[in-house]
Amino acid sequence: MTFTYTPEMFRGGPHAHISHYRDVVGKAFDWNITRKLLQYVAPHKRKMAEVVFLMLAGSGLALLAPYLIKTTIDDYISVGNLAGLSWMALAT
Image 1: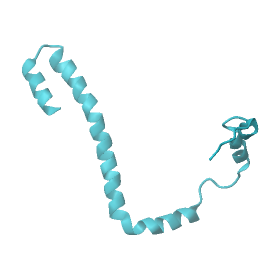
Image 2 (image 1 turned 180 degrees about the horizontal axis):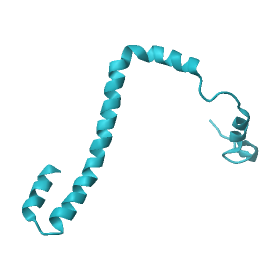
Image 3 (image 1 turned 180 degrees about the vertical axis):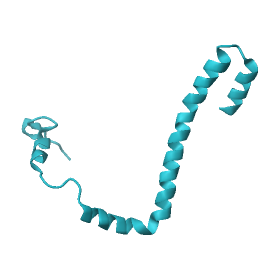
Image 4 (image 1 turned 90 degrees about the vertical axis):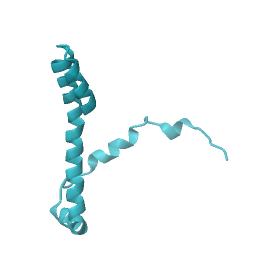
């Protein structure tokens, strides 16, 4: 197997083909397509709700760690409270 490199293959740079998509016109959102999509999703409503809930819970828990670190530094490390620092170490 051989590969022949010619400069014509890469004429215009890596983004040369993007200019073809500038001429695309039409609606960005279509209710008919959305209704059809929702018909396929309808049997899975409960799973979708669970996924949305778990995503929100995961986002909330991701924000909890920096808050606990901030509280640990501000309330326990800066004042030298080793007992509180021990409790925060166990909490995280």
